[in-house]
Image (cartoon, rainbow, N blue to C red; front, side):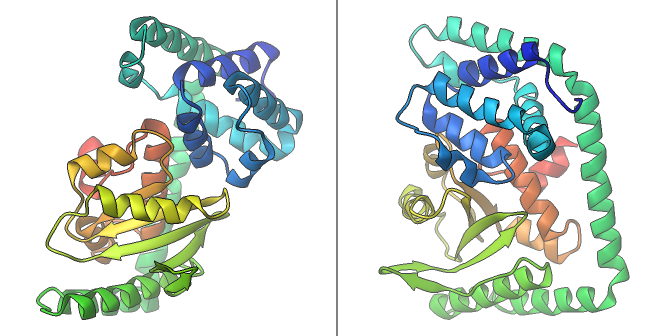
Length: 307
């Protein structure tokens, strides 16, 4: 995609956003995961009509191409990857809405030459992962520290005291965030709510919560964490780590619309400890997939299987 979108492409982009995301909550969630500075969304009146919000946002981005070309490219890229419109089938006149959305995406693809952009972004992702992997291999001190953290984690597997295990897991994750230069903050309380930690990555603030319990983390646990995230600034997302995973109904309920959290499990954590992927690449892959599909729970093993 060039330095500027053509007027026709701008109209196609607006139409695609309005057609694919029928509800404003879904639209906002998608944009929050795409924009480099999600707080930009707070500039708009979300009580307004959806089409007006989309028009105002895209006009703002197009009006400053040097500043927002990356955001425009990201939005176009993620939209053009969409192939599943099942979420629209459930609506009244769903078949018509699906066809309209599919046609809008097709027109956008034709106008912004997405294949070139997709190839470029894929190359950039692979290059970044190669650089991260090489950095990890070459940095003996980092690998030694990662191994030390891994051993501390492994020592907790047989621990019988769940409270102690949970507390130690928080400290392990703090050290992992620090190792990958994520500016971590330890657990804190805010107006009576407990937050296990926080960190920052590429201009986005993340709240973090971890659970190590026999039961799958359920819908109520995810709802409580989502509420904590939603009360923070617009550019805040959440990462929930459940060593033993999440209930199917819990995941489904929290990716239905307006999701602001990303999920990790013990398999993801072990992939990082075993140097199969670095933590930053893992998180960015999860965030990108959530923006593209609405699915907030993509495990490392699913990433590998999809290759």
